[in-house]
Image (tube, rainbow, N blue to C red; front, side, top):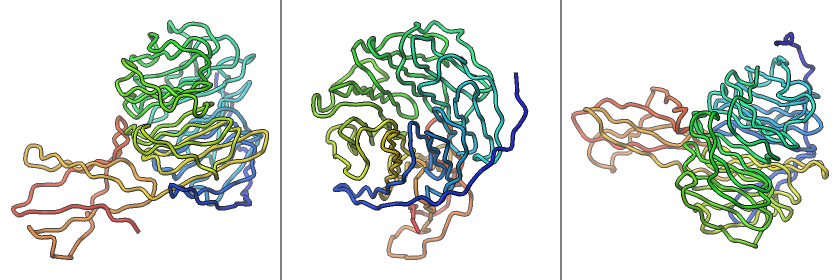
Length: 377
């Protein structure tokens, strides 16, 4: 049942910020807002934080608008669709938080603990506090169903592949479960205890799950697992870049980021401690972490260096790169020599691939050679 569209009262919020530079060149700012859930668009431009209310920014966190709606949040890849799973209502915006409509929550007794959505925002998965089934929505959070075989349990986290076909969820004392058919059927892929958060790459090949004193990591959709720095830091949540190379976990001790698929980790002193929420952009160069009790929202950023992928196909040249979290321009250089400095912008706009979270562009074949590069501002 749909409730009437409501015009929520928005306020432009000027947040007091403090900049801190970490050892890995992640620059952090601290915003004073009680935060229990965070989400951001693929390019990091749209950022959403929920706690005592909901904050939405559409300019990389430079300015914010607030309302009184609260609950776990999810956002589509382009940032237009935002879902806030409150109790007893779910609030949905399809225009970057300008207008909202309310619908019945998955369960009016048990509040949502965590939600995740597909890149287009149409498919949403939710886990609730207490012992409950997994709830699935196929229309962006308007209606929910438990018509699946996931066990009734104390679920603590859920993540979605970009196309929504693969869902990963964790149970506090049972392990990690995977669905490969949009949440209809589920199977156990890791048996362990004290799981508190889970995240996955765009195609759900890379999965990271946080436990009390260790972090579990898989690069084959849960077929095999390894431990990342066991007993070095606990975990209360995780985030993963689209390609699975940049990872982040939060714990009582703070935020830890890996830029090499978990081989090495760096503590981020500017990203708070005793954290409740974490989110990252598709390229893993923009971060959000938050704490409810201390009333903090931390924003982190570093300079992206996107790699171009070029594969000649049928006389054309498909070019792709992970959606960057800072503006870049694709440039082309005609000829066979890099000594020519006449780089020109490619005027066609890239298309966002909602399966991989990559920008894609098809370049017609030329008679001579050509070079391509991504150039930042």
